[in-house]
Length: 96
Image (cartoon, rainbow, N blue to C red; front, side, top):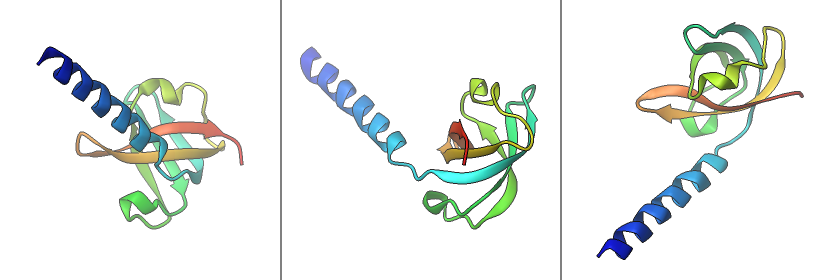
């Protein structure tokens, strides 16, 4: 029974990792970074997995460490998803 539980937990962890990697990458420009609140304002293209059109909006950072290397004016590639009911940035990469 213990082995089955461990296998199930491992499978679920891998599934979660695979889902995170399959999120669409979106281009955007950082408008504002609020590290104290763990938030970032991004002027972004459409986000298909959230059925969201292009717009400028504030996102919560899933991990506040994502915000340490970005500043207003930076061009970024990012992923976003619903995390605990809130639309959150799940990854950020500078460039393009």
